[in-house]
Length: 264
Ligand SMILES: C[S@@+](CC[C@H](N)C(=O)[O-])C[C@H]1O[C@@H](n2cnc3c(N)ncnc32)[C@H](O)[C@@H]1O
Image (cartoon, rainbow, N blue to C red; front, side, top):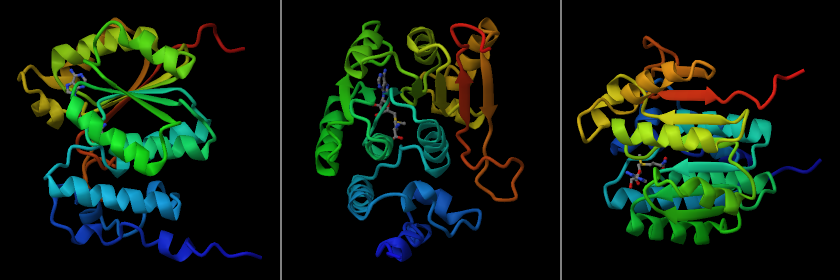
C-alpha cells in the first residue's frame, strides 16, 4: 500500500482562513465549517500553492469579488461529476473561478475546455499571468470583450470546437445587460446544456450599478418567456442553522436547456 504524502495536509487546507479578517473569508468564519472543502482538498500540492499565492496577492490589492466555496463546489459537482468539456464563463475578475475550473479540466484531461470573457483588459492580463503560473494555458482561453457582444458565442465556439454545454454568468450584475446575456447565450448553449447565474438572490439586487434590479429582475422577466426551461433559483444564507440551507447569500440560479429531441 502506498500513502499519499499530501493526504494529511490536504485535509487542513484553508482551515485557518476563518482567522483572517478579509470579508472574502465569510464561508470559513461562519456555520462551523472548519474543514477543507473538496474543491481545495482535491488539488495537487502545486495547485494549492498557486491558489494560496493567489489569495495572498489578490488580498493585497483589497479585492474580494470572486464566487466563494458554495458556488465553485456546485460547479465542480456538475463539471467533474458529469465530465462537461466545453464551458463559457462571463466575468473572470481576478481569476479565482477561472483557475479553479481550469484545474478541474486538467484533472479531466481536457484542453481548450474553458473560454472566459471579461470587459476589463488589465484584469485579464493579470489572470493570464496566473494561468501561466498554474500551467493552465492549454485548458483556458481568455477574451477581452463585453460579454453581451453579439460575436462572442461564435468566437467561443471556434476555441472550444463545439457549442458550450455549460455557461456561467457572473459579470455586470446589471438588469439590462444580464437580459442581453441571457438572450445571446441561451441561443448559443448546446441543447441539454446547463446555465448557472451567480447573484440571483433578492439581496443581490443591490449589486446592479444602474439600480434597476440586477440579475434577479432579469430572471423574473426572462424565465416566464421561456416556460420550456427547467430552472432552480436558490436563495442563500451563510448560517448553518439559518433560514435556508444553501450558504451563499448572493444566491445561485441553475437552468437546463431542453434537449434537441425528447430522451427515449
Ligand atoms: C463578480 S466578478 C467575476 C468573478 C469571477 N467569476 C470569480 O468567481 O472569480 C465580475 C466581473 O465581470 C466583469 N464585467 C462587468 N461588466 C462586464 C461586461 N459588460 N462584460 C464582460 N465582463 C464584465 C468585471 O470586469 C468583473 O471582472
